[in-house]
Length: 161
Image 1 (spheres, one colour):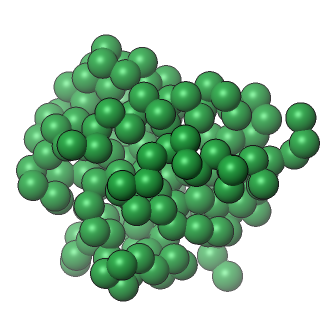
Image 2 (spheres, rainbow, N blue to C red):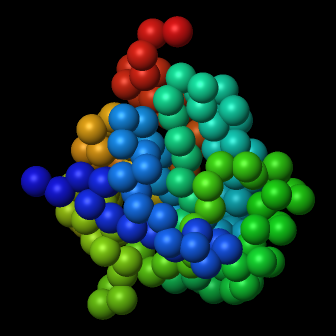
């Protein structure tokens, strides 16, 4: 059975990263966009990262331009926007497709592990996948689910403080 550790991703700076670097962590994978009505969730995602990072949570952001052309920027523009406007310090990766023939392998796998309202397809920006420390998908949260509402599910997977 595949786990998060079986995948690699490209960071915004162009460096390749094995996602096995996050083995043993609770991981929240999110497809982001800078010009979306849900973009303010970046602040809540950063808050989760700051609150639970020391206990073993990592938030991984994957910009996506598949929904309404809401992430048209370059890697540098995306990184600057997220940091300047929302203080994002959690790992951000290069733009990916989350649906369709060119969907990133990570997202093909995530979608196969947790279905949503539209079956396996990601419906919109800021769909969130929660993975346990073994790299197994535990739950999928839709775009409208604010990050603070995910906190109890994250806490249930983290070691007791």
